[in-house]
Length: 139
Image (tube, rainbow, N blue to C red; front, side, top):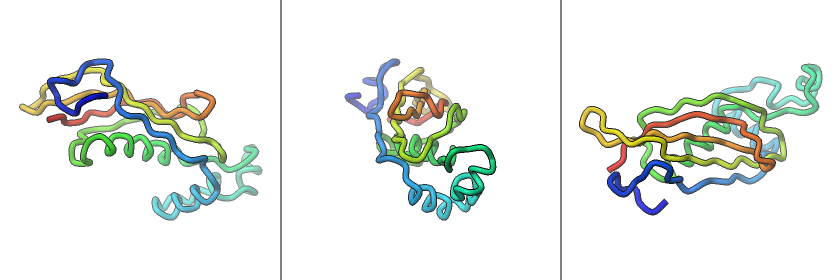
């Protein structure tokens, strides 16, 4: 994407993508501490196995946070008007998260220039783990 300028922005433009390091158990523990979400399926291997999972897996909101980082790498946090997602698949220990956003629409609301973005998180295999949309204000 070339510009953050509303006039230069076009439907179909892609924001710069993000790619994380592989998710580790430490990542999950740190996220649990930061978010206060200590659901044991994310941090306790024995619990996860009793629940029928082969291992702990990442919080869905961690992947959403990575998508929020994608947005704030491009606009200030104060420019985010909305963000909603649907969790499609699990992010496992060892997975990388690849975030992308595509401009789906440009519009003006309440006198403010905005863009609707389709946002997606995928793992290293290309599987969609999170899908949604965000609205940002654009100058």
